[in-house]
Length: 78
Image (cartoon, rainbow, N blue to C red; front, top):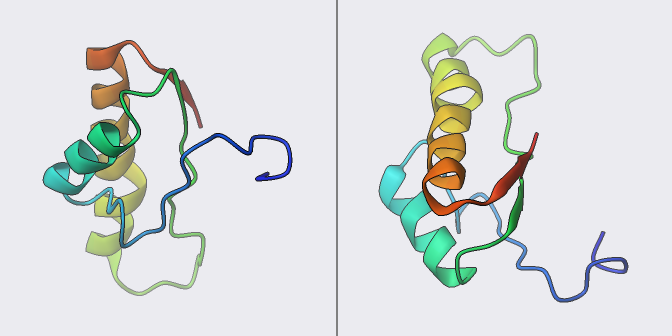
């Protein structure tokens, strides 16, 4: 991905925790209010025994990211 989009801002889970609205806010500020957000955060282990973590990451985290995208006019790719 970096080869094709070298000027993009790439964030790790520690740099943008979708379970934490403050973390998302900092990430949007760091990315200078992006035009496009490629949202890849997810728990994909179907054997995960922590249902709350699944909900917070996959559902609520996605809702939070989508809300920020909507508020600032960024396109969301999910």
